[in-house]
Image (cartoon, rainbow, N blue to C red; front, side, top):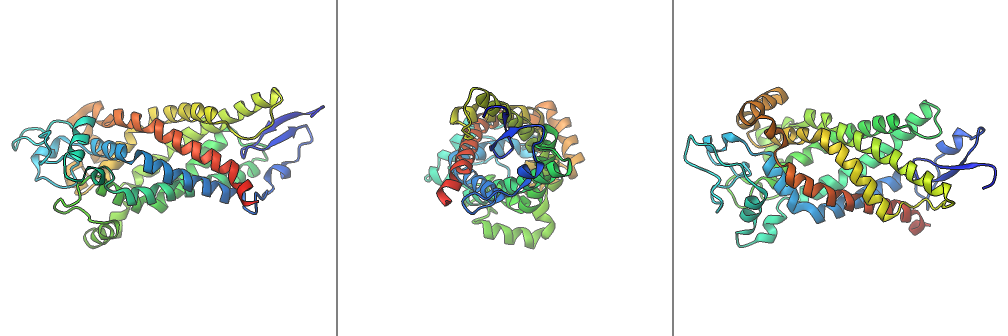
Length: 355
């Protein structure tokens, strides 16, 4: 386009950037195949959550069990929610009064695959994880889209700034956490136990009934405060991801390519950088959340955020806050790639499919 410079907004549309650019053009609720941008974002997020969960669920079990390990494991009666099994060939439990050895990725995988139904063990707790991830991603992208537009409108910006993306993602993350925390409590407890172990939840519904009967509604919101602190992860991630996408598109546009589709290669690179930056500064909160949401959390890990932090620091030191980091890193990149590849492709192609 002669006489103007093209730029890309937060939904991937190229626009001429001129002094007289109309803010209403950006803020207008464009329809895509009869769907609003927020609905497109939600469907893309839902698809990403489902597929990524199916791919990486076994590693999620390993990460969750490592995050919930505690030196107190050998000092209290074995529980199906300890993530460390007395019947395991790795021999995690020692005699009373002696500390149990920290579990490793290998020993946990060995314990999961050494029984007669290894595949079912590797996908233990899939239902709450699937429901939780699908609901979370769909809700997050829906809220994020709405908050981005509202913030940009309030600030009269043509395009959201990095700070706007941070704020919109933080608000979207907080809203999503409140909606989905009960699912994550169930998921954490089911992933922490072998089906058939004493006290293990046989199903998501049975687990919900048990929590309601023994802990009340409050039990579904264990770890919510930590989860709300954890919205900083998504906020940092998208404060890096969205501006990086904009730079990528503007560089392409400068070369004469106005196709608004993010290539798969670019998606992998940009999402990796954003995830690594966010993960480096927010991983400890995931450990806190896993321990607070677990069965008999007050007895095993301490009461409240302050109690859990104090106990981890006293018994495990700094290492305790990064328990499960290795499988977390192994898991996080494939999960991130799958999530964002599905999200970006569904987000781009869905309007055409619906047209």
